[in-house]
Amino acid sequence: MESNTEMSRQVTVLVIGAGSRGRNYSSFAQQFPAHMKVIGVADPHPFARKRLQKAHGIDEDNVFDDWTAAAEKERFADAVIIATPDSLHKAPAVAFAHKGYHILLEKPMAVTLEDCKEIVLACKTNNVILAVCHVLRYHPVSLKIKVGFWHFAHSFVRGNWRNEAESTFSLLAKSCHDVDLINYWMGSRRCLKVSSFGNLSHFTKEHKPEGAADRCLDCSVEETCPYSAKKIYLAQAERGYFGWPVSVVCHSGEYDIESLTDALRHGPYGRCIYECDNDVVNHQVVNMEFEGGATVAFTMVGFTHKLGVRKTTIYGTKGELSCEGSGPVEIYDFLERKISSFSPDKAACVPMCLSAHSGADYYLMESFISAVAENNPSLIRTGPEDTLNSHLLVFEAERSRKENRVVLLEV
Picture 1 (tube, rainbow, N blue to C red):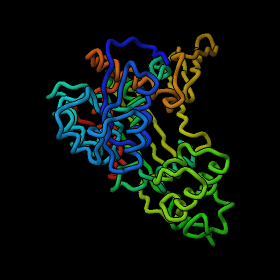
Picture 2: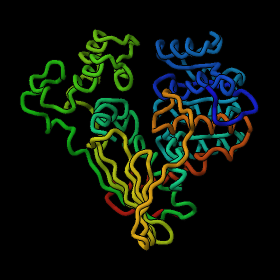
Picture 3: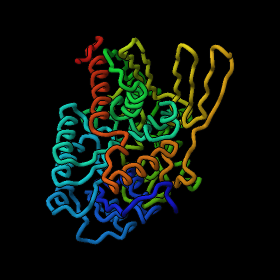
Picture 4: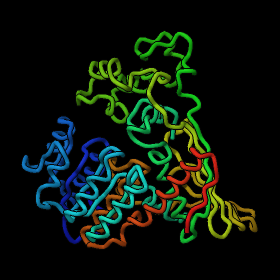
């Protein structure tokens, strides 16, 4: 497949974390081998590690069960993709920056502001490119403008992001994308103050239906529950679909009905949605005031029909702009009293394996690999300082929610 961008050389990459996101980003090398080659992998899970090794033909010398072993070697790749769990971003990012690797870092940058600052300092000190995977900034619709119910149940009640101590809070895990995009659209105008409200109002033991079992496979009222693991996972597998989120459930790597059923009977994804150890909010609002008087209202909600579709409306003095998902963008002109619509130009070839976030994964990878190949950080739209600023807003919004007050941002 031909890329939309000419590159002067092939970029070699080491992958830290061979799960869903690590595999997605790595697939750019399979689609565009002249531009990128994966030559190393580190992951503690044998199946994930070996699967990525096989997919890219990685030499055994560059396959590791721990990222620290890879970091101890002399630098052997141009760049590193860090797609570890949220709470395990800082240590490898700092270590590989000191080794001179350019870094593609899955969002969020880290789970504390102090760790974010340490990553930024390490990258600046060692003069390496850092791109944080706020993929929405790279989508043509976002540039032109300058969460579904079962997705929330899968990831934020049963899944890896359900518990703040094990991962981080919902706004950072799920919606740092959105706050970053707001910050990007506001340009040079600084956010002055922020307030936020939200809570865990539904996915609790108090809301468990009468007669419900601890596991969906054993539940007599499962058919009446929209969050049933049988509906979310098993029904899809029975139709022959074993992609995300079904693929996340089967840690063994065996994708069949028997293995999936066993995982639902014994693993975390088969638990009653009201009997999990989740403690992150399932809905939250954030209000921001920027320099010049502009205000922003953002809502994150786990109870929606459409999966991960973001709805945006920008109100101006001369018109109103609105967009749902990847477009089209509609503009209502107050003077002409007319609606115009346009769809920004998109790449002719967005591979299916990079089509997540309406193809934004592809645009991110193309920009990062181009930046490394040409040693041109200006091609990165989510660099250290920009990302640090947007993360600051997220941390302050969460502080507002927890302390029940308006937070004034320091100059």
